[in-house]
Amino acid sequence: MRRYLLSAAAVGAVVAGTMAYADEMAAKKWIDEEFQPSVLTKDEQLAEMNWFIEAAEPYKGMEINVLSEGIPTHSYESEVLTKAFEEITGIKVNHQILGEGEVVQAVQTQMQTKRNLYDAYVNDSDLIGTHSRLQLAHNLTDMMAGDFKDITNPDLDLQDFMGIEFTTGADGDLYQLPDQQFANLYWFRKDWFDREDLQAAFKEKYGYDLGVPVNWSAYEDIAEFFSNDVKEIDGTAIYGHMDYGKRAPDLGWRMTDAWLSMAGAGSVGEPNGVPIDEWGIRMEAGSCNPAGASVTRGGAANGPAAVYAIRKWDEWLRAYAPPGAASFDFYQSLPALAQGNVAQQIFWYTAFTADMVKPQSEGNNTVDAEGTPLWRMAPSPHGPYWENGQKVGYQDVGSWTFLKSTPLDRSQAAWLYAQFVVSKTVDVKKSHVGLTFIRNSSVNHESFSERAPKLGGLVEFYRSPDRVAWSPTGVNVPDYPKLAQIWWQQIGDVNSGAFTPQEAMDRLAEEMDITMARMQRADEQAEIYGGCGPRLNEEKEAEWWFANGGAKPKLANEKPQGETVNYDELVARWANN
Image 1 (cartoon, helix red, strand yellow):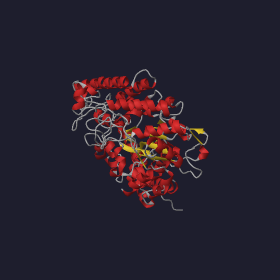
Image 2 (cartoon, rainbow, N blue to C red):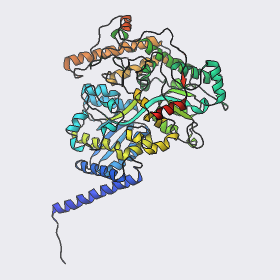
Image 3 (tube, rainbow, N blue to C red):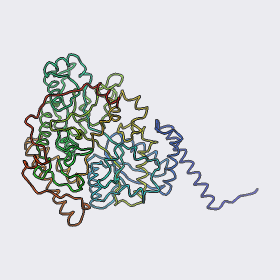
Image 4 (spheres, rainbow, N blue to C red):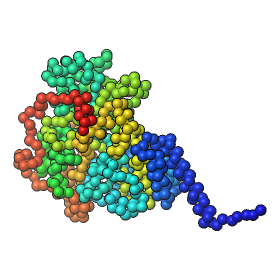
């Protein structure tokens, strides 16, 4: 019997070939059984997965750790996509999920200590001003031309991402890669709004049609109408408004997430106001140096529009929301809405869509027996200080962020995972699960045309030209973790009755300026913020700034005539565009 002996190299080649074949078989399995539908054909999907197999070869056997907040999209990544990625590439990912505040805290801790806690984060693009200044996160433009060059997917297609401008610094470079995206929109019970008896009663009382509110005056009228006139439907007490007010960090984000700009506090400009952004922080066009938040420094955080915004939040929460809403946090407000006893919500996040389209059998009273929503989402109404050309709402863009304190090989392996979970092979299916669109190609996929009637206007909104008026925190905010923590305590003092809205916003603006003054000194001494730290204006009388491009002066009438629009006509206009 003749025996054949193979060299060690030959044996290695056979084993490697077998492993590669096994990886490809795993890719085929996932493509067939999970990653459908897709904008790619199955052959194109397999080609993209084969690229991942080859690119991941040097990192096979590694185990990495990443962190994100808890929404359905990230649950899908943590529970399903990590398994797919490991079977296809051989890289194990521990994708941990914590609360949003804990994610921000972890990012801040790693930046301060330079100790590697996680190999990558899905960190909101609200920190773009922080990351581009502190230079503690990798500049992805540089990395894709350098240490990430050989492991950057040639089919990544950055121009397909809807939120790419939000993750771009003032220097024009990319610092974060979008992973999920959702907006705060107006939510309402269309089945109630369509009732002829309610339409007639509203028209008789207010003199205009019951419909989607264009301004805050109409929103307030509708809230009053359902809470105090209608009072109950089908024997159930109903309310005209929903919000939350628990004294916790997410109460601060509730306000920095464009609430002031929805009232009209900022300046005209997209994606953020110039020179005054939605936080009320001033930064001149062409500059990278924030100049102040207080009215007396040219900012608007304690200006008439900001104070009006906080006052209305507090008044509506007390007058029109269900009992207990003032003690709800961000996460508790969703199940409360699903009870089906609220007519509208001015500040509703589309990240909740996946839960709000669950069937009646799962306790959702806002869909019919066939699962079709009884509600719709629509553009956010704006306050009396708002001007055409201003942003009108917030867009959360959770984005992959890589800190320089992470060892390079671990960052590289995590970069592969990040690209995998946003790849065209995966993204349409992931979008169907989480409904947090990041790619134009996905939201325009035919499968979403088919599903749109069951999603309450989400698809129509993301396909519309109006969506550009919704944006995250921009580059005016020099250090998001330091400044964001100031907000919730001051706003909580309004909710508790300890301070008036004016007193609270005066304190908030002053504390922001004090914090930014510290940043200024640090930047001047050691360029901690790369020379782009704050450079505060000298204080001047508020009246001078009112007349010279600062905060908007107080209006004589903060409640103009209410204005509404017919929802079906609005959607038709979107479709025609």
